[in-house]
Image 1 (cartoon, rainbow, N blue to C red):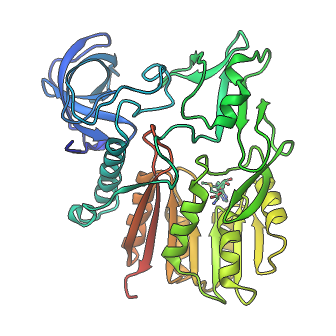
Image 2 (image 1 turned 90 degrees about the vertical axis):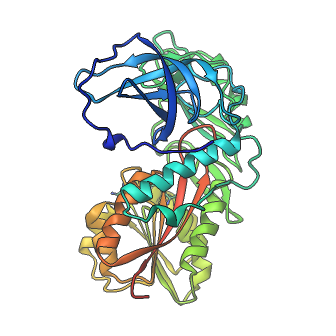
Image 3 (image 1 turned 135 degrees about the horizontal axis):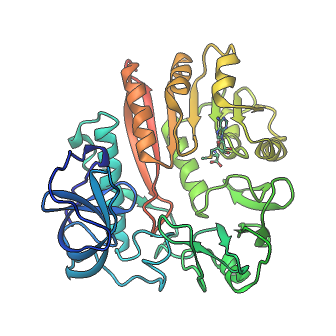
Length: 413
Ligand SMILES: C[S@@+](CC[C@H](N)C(=O)[O-])C[C@H]1O[C@@H](n2cnc3c(N)ncnc32)[C@H](O)[C@@H]1O
């Protein structure tokens, strides 16, 4: 499969005849775009089409033709010329449920698509030379064989009849499903979709590594606690606090972060967007009691979790508050390394600028959105930093999501 990539913002103005919702067209699919969609052109008009693959010829129905948009959206109805990466989706709800994008693609094919998207974001938004990342691969999370049974956290929506299900793609309707194949066995055993949830809006299901799975209707923070295992430690956290959803992801990311910043005894390290303290806890022994790790997190329930989990490390300080404001207020002057794990929107220019002023020798940027990562990389590069390494992990098989760990270093090092 040749993974040409299309940039959504690169779509040119189109003045020809317009396709309308419901039209059925035959289409050569030429590329993949960020977001679990592929791209082709129909009589010059750009078509973003789901459930296909680059190189395929498909019959597709137009699902959305926004009046002022320069493109239409479509879904595949028949595949006239499949590519070898196409497989029969393991899940019977593939195509109906909006949770997965790549059920119809082999695991190697999914990773090739994700690698192409990461490469394209680094090039287009991050200003990287396209040749530089040609060898970038998306690594499977150790232990993941078939991309199923990994999701340890799920949020089900409840419809007016009290039935729990998952949303269709870009849809408000709840698809009643019997079971979800990417859900971890502990979540499947809860049988959330076979029970009634009258009067509730949603059900949060968590299958932790070291405590009993729980299904919580309309979950509120601060009530249900779970236990996870990472870096050979047990972590106690609120069921609503952030934790990587793939059970192998915390260890894979810790090891990538360690390899990136190479912590030394006595180091002063910032763990920004720290959650319940995953990276701070993992790096605490590396820096030893002569070192200092400052973890910053805005969610007060997660902060309580971090304090409880890391109270045995005198070298760890946990700060409650927004990273932006904390960096602005502190007179840190210098730190040795930074772990940066922001939400999907990325860190942004101000946070990046504040971090770079501290002149750390390395920033390990953990990113769940390669576009946000690439924008922040561009900010760092404008300030004289360079992107030294990138690893990408298949932490969300069957979906278009991918987790990256990038190493940024000052150019003069
Ligand atoms: C992607 S999670 C990472 C958590 C942690 N590093 C981990 O791997 O478990 C992002 C975290 O940033 C927190 N957060 C979001 N915006 C923030 C902000 N402006 N300042 C501080 N923390 C923030 C969220 O509450 C969440 O815990």
